[in-house]
Amino acid sequence: MQSRLEVLTPDGTGWRREPLAGPPKLDHCEIVGTEPDHSDAYLLASEGFLRPAALLHGHIGDAVETLKREPEFFDVGGHAVRQFFATSDDGTRVPYFVVGDPSATAGPSLLTGYGGYEVSQTPYYSGVVGRGWLARGGSYVVANIRGGGEYGPRWHRAAMRSRGVK
Image (cartoon, rainbow, N blue to C red; front, side, top):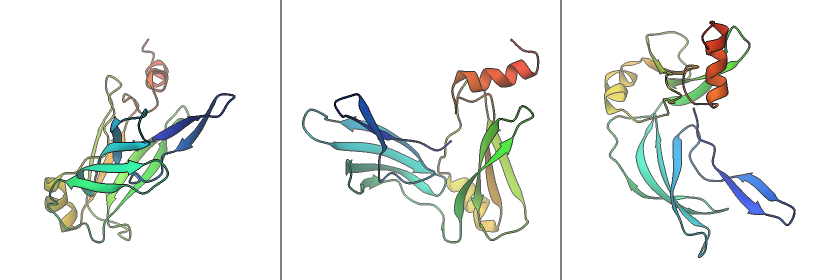
């Protein structure tokens, strides 16, 4: 599941909600520090399938800068991260990521997924997957199956009820 970070600003009648500009798309990102009484600066932890963990610094409305990044263990050139959605029997869209060469029409794929106890499998960097699989022409697929917490407990429980589980 990709992260969605938003800025909430009081506007006199309530709160105005806008996306936080700057975090990398299709990475897992989370705010790890702010000082809202002093500035609009924030610290962001970010990691993706093609980007190792990094600590980013930004100000609301401006670009983010990388303060520190873990080392890269494989060449990401020619690879991309794409997100797609499968449709379950009850019509619910279920997200999954495909990492690899976007121009490849066929080839070996390594499929993994997790969906239990409302815990999501978020994008993460793996030198082993990158060097051992992607660099050799494979695609890596991560399914966010219905037991995860991508869309909250109701999304998870709806799949259980379709199977007669209460």
